[in-house]
Image (cartoon, rainbow, N blue to C red; front, side):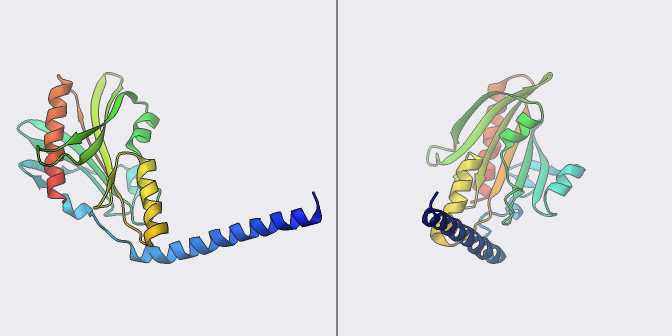
Length: 208
């Protein structure tokens, strides 16, 4: 390699490093003004007759997020139960991650995964990801989505692209939330799905 070529290569590397340093400095300053479009405070204990009960997080979950950034709750209505986990990040990207990775990493087998739309005849924009998972003798349905209060995504990569787009193109940082609703399948998967989608529809209506 000639001296000129090597000098050009070092110059490019230097410029890239300079850009990264400036971006990280700017990003750190911007985190002080994070826009909260959708807050955990909007998820109430009573959702159209569903009565919520706060559950105690494990030590791992306590260390995972700051106090106030995590909701773990069960809801009951007419002898039906659903389990809700909501995590909100505030500029700290490790807090929001994919429930799919959580289940796979915990030994659950994903039997089916798809995106579906939940809503009434006039509102079909509640896009969520649905998974049918199994472990040992348990079978469970899991619904989840990511939202910043304005947009939603059904994948971690998808929400990360939108997060970076807002930073680079709009110069804003919006806090994202991951909402996960699950229920064990006791007898019939279709009936369990129907109950869960009714709950999610009411939860979404409340958080508009």
